[in-house]
Image (cartoon, rainbow, N blue to C red; front, side):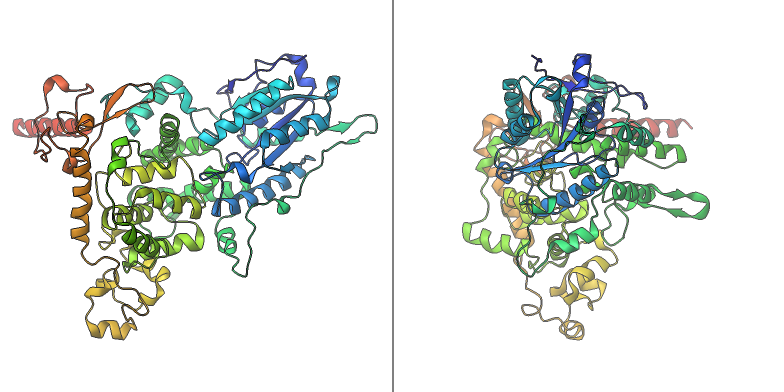
Length: 615
């Protein structure tokens, strides 16, 4: 009888070395292994579970699809489209190495896994020895994985869990409460905690090693007849996934823009990092630091997030590719930290499993939004790109047509929905999850929580729907709101300010071929929005520090202070606080409310002034 074992498996940091799991007896490697693919690791290169499974005599790649298990925050909408495409490419790539992706569909993935193990046989060496998978780190996946473990334990089958979709396993990282170079759960304390507690991210094996590994792998065989012994599989095109009904083939534009294969992921990454200084040619990475917010400039962002979400690209490979760019004199800090933001989102989700639709700052659930009647009208105008604010409409139309927006535009439309339309952030989070090709049930709600002010690091800014620095040339708005394309830049993002003759010359009739504004006085709406937060905080003084900062309770019961925007800081009488001198005794402790980097910047400024005075 084999033993049932579970572990979080890591490989060594040597590029050419990925030994079998140390917890398994050597004899187990002579038995057949199953490696499970899911919606977050659809790749062969840099796939830790596959690397470990490759040491077995025979390997069976398996994908189990249960639409019923996806729930509200699983694979749905646009994500189904690119996942199905990625699976097609994965199956094709496996076939090049005489391997086959076995696909099954049902309501319970653990039941399907049991069936596969039983079908393959459980007699002696012919049975399944080990099942490998990479953890997904969501609340739903933890339930699914627990069912896997229970099923395999009942069957006396070994299993090994790995970490391959993030730089770090969120369960391996812990943060102390209070202010420690940043408030709890913000980027810098998390980044430092990861490297201090876990070291540098795992170095992926080379692509040549992956090719050699695949060439050595052998599928199930009938040794007596010297033939393959593959299990029955449903064709990928028959899966109940991204089934488009009706004449509107809305998936076509998505598949045209996002080709989801490992080869395309590598091509997109190479193009983004391309740099030929002597020829004056460079990809988006060289421009990212200054131009990443520009929606009107093609290539200013990487568009690699969809590959990272589905797993056609390893985050570890992207991380070390980014780090290597510093060797050619390019700044890599900002882009490199994007990968840590991904990990941070999953750390938040691990700490607050209900964060997709419930405020992390629980008392913010008491915030009053617009009325139900207003919400329906405003939300529908927002999601369909009919708000009368051109930049917002451009973003929402691009999202619906292609499943994509740059991060800067996502922030504009999120800020507009929450701050000016006063619609609950959960509504925006749900729509983004359905329409984004890179819909991620940790990253998406982290952004919306912060936009809605209830997250760990509430936004310390408001993005104007009319300033339009993200579209300085106007080309972005003209592309997605063509009815305004003939307006001059001076009024393109505020057409209601255009003289009547200018509107006539451009063929624009507000209220007819382009909607009038859904709200006319955005300043007044913003005042109502801020007052709603203040009133909520006045009613929840038990979560307010003496310096006006919010308190939250962590999963372990500890209470910690979190960053609170200056305009929302109130005293014990509910009055908005003026600037409060920082207490020396509170520096670096949990009672401190300031951001450390600002204090350091001020100190450096004083030192520079003193040095200048001496000279």
